[in-house]
Image (cartoon, rainbow, N blue to C red; front, side):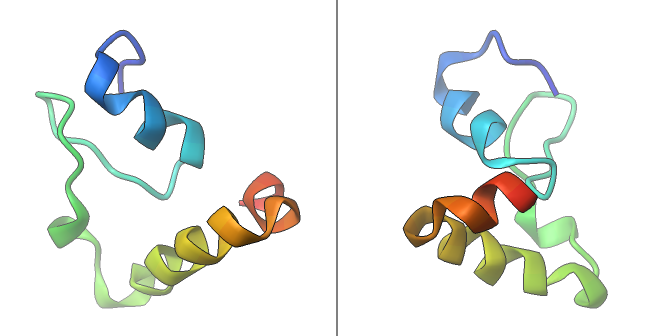
Length: 55
């Protein structure tokens, strides 16, 4: 994942749970069923800074 694409700065700052394809676009649909929990965890992290730091 590259950090020099402006529209991806927010995604890059959230954590490694956000996957990106070769174009730098977020690819949530490619997460396996075992990884789905990370999406809700990221949403919780927006409200709980401590969780975001632990992600």
